[in-house]
Length: 350
Length: 186
Image (cartoon, rainbow over all chains, first blue to last red; front, side, top):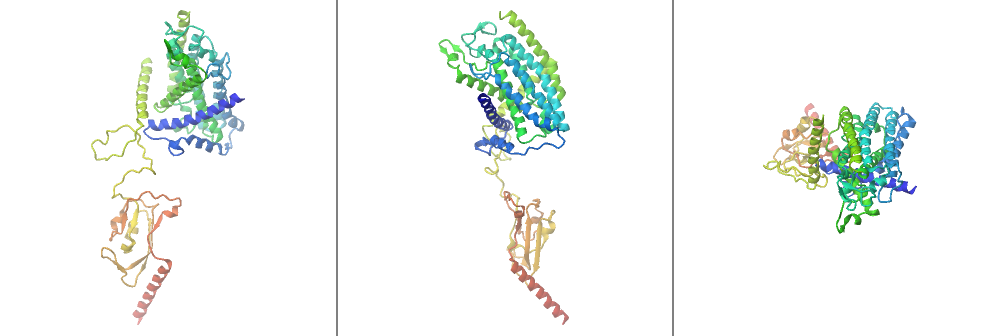
């Protein structure tokens, strides 16, 4: 119960921070200032937005399917929120270190596709329906390369337990860690022990996972479903007030969640990037509860920052280009990575 | 296929580099430069926002913004109201029995201005009224920042006659007319 409330509080706080920083980053990238009026340099802008959304009336379109319309934001948000249950934040600190952690996370965030469909259909609005159809097509297609990239990593880590995946990327590991499969860095830890560097093809797998996760979140350049200039709001056109706030919260929570999955599986999770150099045992000094949370947060926020940077740079992909990218480029590459993982595991990591 | 994908990555990387440069370039703000200088286009980085109520862009002294009427110089000829394309000037005049006075440039005043309203909300800042005015009493000032919450406050009244004065002058004129009529019939 308390863990749930802490996680919800964290998600809400993160969204406050993320929306503000997104607007400021968008402003600076476009040579303008972003929010400046509410609070010092606009820091209270998101708080004002949340307060506005909370006090709005619950409007349901007359011809909308009442049950689906009301249930959709709930489904979307809960699916994403439940994904946080297995994420490891520090050594020994995970709400629930399931043995199937990774499998559970991927499965549960797929449930939000149902919520999207419910929103689009229940709105009784052509644009919403179109938006949600595109959203679901996109999410379902991009799960393939995303899942395959994760499988490539799992073949190396030999476990689906998120906490163990992280433990095996640092100095606390029980297995021998080999940088690029050659140099034994088990005692050195740090940057060299991360999965992306232990098996170099995992770097490609991580890039595939990152791109696929952008598409899962409906973030630019894959934001056809909520293409503001084309479909008004896509599947969330008819939503306003608290229901819209939940959809919005779910979007930012999902951004954080997929960034965190990437960080945990590929970039060392709560492990430090500082190696033990001889007597200067930086890795030992910078691993622990507080350090673990710090490293997790900073790595994930860096990835979220890169997601925002990409949003304000790249133009939107057309629906067919999006599908073509997924099926013709990412999926074959992901299969290749999986094959290399198999060979690596048998040939190199005996 | 791979050539296209590679090309896509390269162009995406170039775009990201530009965006990152702008992101870090936003530490500085661009100053307002004189457009006549040779190096006007040199400074390409920096935030361009002018945070309006607190910072203002400089405007020339001869800027053509809101209208101002020097009512003592007005001979109430009604040319400005006739010239206005959007009919934002409303003038009501009362004939005076004799010369009232002189304007600053020597023209003789024979009409009282009972009402001289300019609706600034309608004004389109074309300046035609200033062109036709014979005494140059209507001018364009460099004031542009007068926002009101009540639209009616944007109708500027320049006439300075009280209702009792207006009544009095009207009675004087009617009396004068009547006397003239009487003198003619005799």
